[in-house]
Figure (cartoon, rainbow, N blue to C red):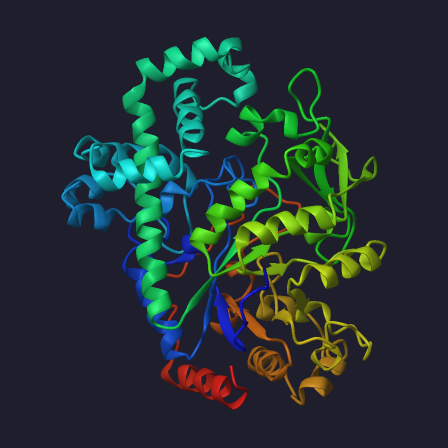
Amino acid sequence: MEAREILRGSGILLSIASLPSPYGIGTLGREAYNFVDLLVDLKQRYWQVLPVGPTIYGDSPYQPMSGCAGNIYFIDLDKLVDEGLLKKEEILGYNWGADESEIDYAELYQNRCKILQKAFQRFDTNAQGFQGFVTKHSEWLGKYALYMALKTDNLDKIWCEWPNEYKELQPVALANYRKQNYNIISFWEFCQYKFFEQWHELKDYANSKGVQIIGDISFYVGYDSVDVWSERNLFLMCANDKPSYVAAAGPDKYSDDGQVWGNPIYDWEKMKEDDFSWWRRRMRVSRELFDIVRIDHFAGIVKAYAVPYGQDKTTSGKWIKGPGRKFINAVNEELQGVNVIADDYTSASLLPGVKKLLAKSGWMGTKVMMFAFDGDPTNEYLPHNYTDPHVVAYIGTHDNETIVGSFSEKTDYELAYLYEYLNIENKSQIPNALIRALYQSTADLAIVQMQDILELGNEARMNYPSTVGHNWRWRLTSKPQRLSDEKRAWIRNIAVVYRR
């Protein structure tokens, strides 16, 4: 099926987690609707979010606990108050973190499930909407809810440390567990019901205002996930239930030493046997949630870099062949015309195969302007070198420094080519000049991080690749981080001038 027509336009990249909220993390509540209104005011057509799946150790949305489930932290608590499922004083009785500019994942971990359980206790599980949701999503929801119940019962230990009957998915043991723990399993189904319900309401609102949502899909899932636990035959695993290899990346412009991501590697031959049914399931959920789908790590469909489990260096890695065109066809069949953005930035050694597959896929490629200014006028990331408008152009992504952070320490000598290219004279002019150059480009979509529109430094950076411990925490605050009327007018103007 052919993809739907892409409207030339611009948009903003902002994680749901980064929205303002008095409860520790951004949600699908009032501030999300306010952000849609901001996009409309700025004449933007697109809102790109980061992956919305449930996170595990390290808090990375690219290490989800499920390939289909939503992050229950994003459920808006005030909406549950409006529905009579919570009381405001109950929510305020918990600590959601002391700093509104930064997510405190430890506090969320301690308290979010507790408050949601209070809401569940007042919820009628016989409600038609809930029962319909459970039935509609039965191919993944029941297994996910069972996994989360078992994980909670086992003190949140990783599944390979559970009692043997649960670790090995013994049918009788699991059937008995379901009977004895029906209520807690229903709680996890309820959380997904509320996430999907609130998501659909937000998406309907955005679409009614002419805004489309671009959803980001992590290429891999986490080892500590329902998917690896329940379908480990689809991953390259050892007899001791540890991955034989984990995902990694060689040295590139994101990391001089490469990165060890740690996700289990797919057994593509096994996945081919049932025509990628696991991926098809993920794509059906994605089609429901998003107007456009971005698939992370497109190069892995051609060839993936992997290192032995337990290694923290990329030097011992090897290349593993990906599924290629057959995978692309399966994804396209399930998405039924939903456009796909391929994260096709990769190493030069892979480039020919990646570019060939991308051309056959019909998917949109990616350009990142932060990689453009090395002084080479033939650099493919410079806007004048875009040969195909069917691309999404970014200044930077969640893995990059902010504009201000990237250029603040550079000398005027180092920035001479950038100054000449953008026709500017000093660093203070760089953010707006880059945005203008992006909008001027022939790329169908032009996406700018909210941090860069606000001209924030690296204190607002979302992720430092190959590090763990302080990523994915940046948030908009409720008051100081607001666009001036002058900046709003400027963005509206260039959106019109460049037909965005």
